[in-house]
Length: 303
Image 1: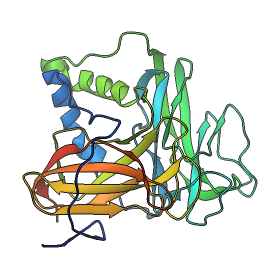
Image 2 (image 1 turned 180 degrees about the vertical axis):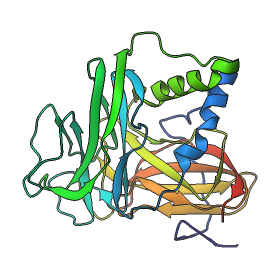
Image 3 (image 1 turned 90 degrees about the horizontal axis):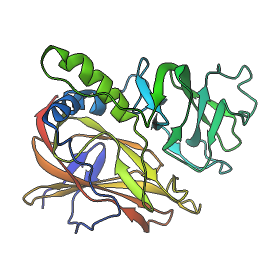
Image 4 (image 1 turned 120 degrees about the vertical axis):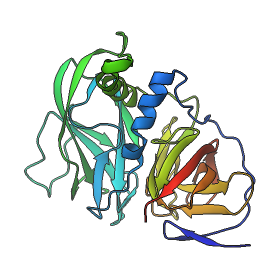
């Protein structure tokens, strides 16, 4: 059997897929909405290596207009995630600064307040409810004692347009497509996520999408206090991601084991049709949650 290297890992072997708690998220059924979603695939899955260590919002950008409550996805590159109280020089946990500047004293623990939101259980995203108007958001990564690493995102400014119960934007045809597509897409990306039980999921790719390679997969956990932590730790309700790539129609199975607690993976695959299953494993490697495989295709290789 051939073996391959994907994203820096030696891969190969055979895997029997197991159904998980979450179904693979489908592409929009409406033709215009599907066209709009697919127009943003390259942006969502792009590889960004400009900074070896950085945090960023996976689903929001400055200028977005959303209804509230809205969902915020955390992205981290070059470090892992681990719950607060667990010392690890290569991992930490997220904080959101809302309508407030960076702390002046970077050696002091981040305060607990309405404008300094802590995610010390190793979360990968959260729901936020803010009143209508302009708001600023920034991610700040910190250590076991809530003291900031010198790792923070750019500040983004978003506009809350109203309540999530208000009618949302629609994608319109013809000359109105581009503007209406952007409004619909921004609101959809910020839609709150709900889980029945525990869930692991791919944040930025839906079933049957097409990507160019290499590409980035962003990963999330949801439900029942579930969090992320590196392998080798013994922290309740936390685990690290494993990715299994299968060539559809048979062939080699490719794997990535994100033992350091990373929540993003850079993947490089030849042109072809694949499916990826994401699972979460505890510190000893035992499975906690297994997700349903997501089918996708690579149509171009940019290298």
